[in-house]
Length: 346
Image 1 (spheres, one colour):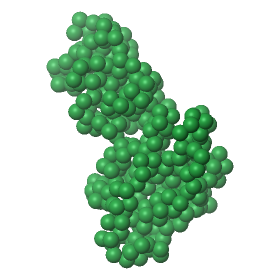
Image 2: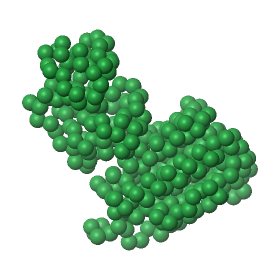
Image 3: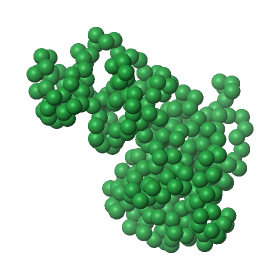
Image 4: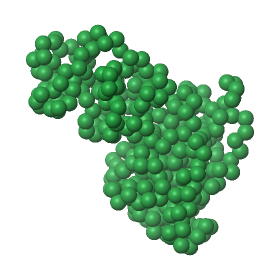
């Protein structure tokens, strides 16, 4: 592929418009419009062409915008109306099959789809245009489609609860491409928008490094943080004389533990181990530790590696045998958790 060829992103939002989404419909439009504005800004900054497709689904699946230049997108205000059942499988199949007919000439094309639902599948077998009236056949069709998608296709889904997550895994969605959102409140919808934005950031930055697709868009686990992705992100190892790793023996405030360990506490010098879901502010630095060697990698690219946007966002630690994530603390009272480690930049 010659260097002069464009990166062309085809980003699709497949939005649940069943009756149960009625109380969120205004917020759905607002979040989708914000996502499109964000895509437009990042496309220009990263010099990538982005084309947006929007599907809405209830008793039937409707494409309301198809492969339109992100810089010319209308608001979804007139295009999103909630009412009806949930044709989740039919919407997933239709969106991917129709997008697969998009020409991929003269450029490095990549497809990223987010399906957002607040409930379980209950109507695809009756949906006009569905490939089968048998619900089990529809599940098999989705699983086969996902299994056979090319490496430049990324399909992610946001579901309302653990039952939805189990169902999505049965449908063949990669487990790290499934996120759970709070479908009961407008705040939950806002947070879902942040999750989508964070995943999109990781995807678009990954494109600049030659990554064409991902089966781990919502992950900080081994699929997202490994030797290859660290190298691709351009992270550099810190000189071992520049940091110290201090075991945490009991629950205590971060400044107190630094001082007790014989060091001077300076704001921002200490990083705590990410061990539970947390909100990470826009200015917080991230460090990544290789467990086998105690090598530490940091720099602005570490935020990029995790897909962290320039705003506060919630992040969770996923299981990773080889790497641990550390987050900069700017508080003197941050409680450290026993049996973790503290990373001190000296």
